[in-house]
Image 1: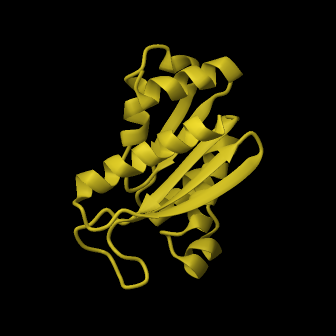
Image 2: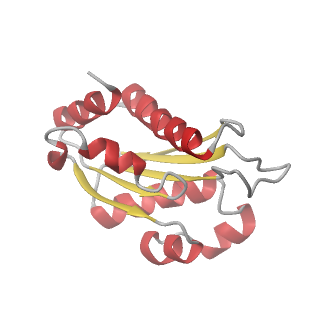
Amino acid sequence: MNKEEIVVQKLIDKEYHISCAESCTGGMLASRIVNVPNASMVLDASIVTYANAAKIKYLGVNPVTIDTYGVVSEQVAGEMAQGIAKEQQAQVGIGISGIAGPSGGTPAKPVGMVCFGIYLAGRLLTYTMQFGNIGRLAVREKSVDFVFDKLIELL
């Protein structure tokens, strides 16, 4: 089985539902989930919130959090994960925000930096990964693989 098949099966076994709030991955996480038969048993909703205003409007991300930490931060990714889980009444919420490149990086937040929020049955975990300036598509793919790896570990 591939990673997404393992995650879907684990979610089915636990009777958990998952919802995703994606920014830099642009729906790639949800797309890989729906490649799996029976994904409809676990995937409630997914939303691509690329703009800050969308994160605020649809996920309840606090504008002060964005102003204080920046949109690419564990704090914002965590609020994205919690917001989508709460909105969809899902046991699992995923938030992803990052800089896929090739531009947009700074010394403090370089291209290839991606922040993740994983809300799992009432517990919020956040992570930051530095994938490097490896190309836009590769950063997105590595980000999605990171989420699947974490979910396999945590579920």
